[in-house]
Length: 126
Image: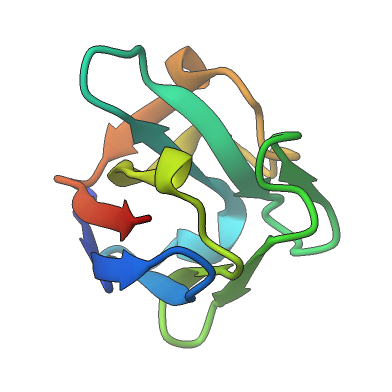
C-alpha cells in the first residue's frame, strides 16, 4: 500500500510563494511519475503539474506555467511543487498523486493516477 502525505500549504498574499511537499511510502517510488492536481470550491479537480519517473520530463498546466516548478528527490521519496507569484485563483486544495503505470511520463489525466494524498489547502489572499 502506498501512502502520500502532502504538506506546505497555507495562507499567503498574492505575489507570494509556497513550496508544497509530498512524502511517499514504498520502495519503488523512483519507478513512477508523480503529479500535482488541485480542486477549488465548486470546481472539478484539475491538473497542475507532473514529473516523469526519470525526472527528465516536466508538464505544467498553462495556468501555472512559468510560476511553478516541480521536482523530486528519489532518495527521500519526496516530490515538491514550488509555487511563485501566487494569485487568488490559485486558491484550492492541492493533491499529490502517483501515476498508475510504471516509468510513465506524467499524465495530465487524473484517472491515470491510482494513489492520492489527502490534500493540503492553499489560500491566496488579494
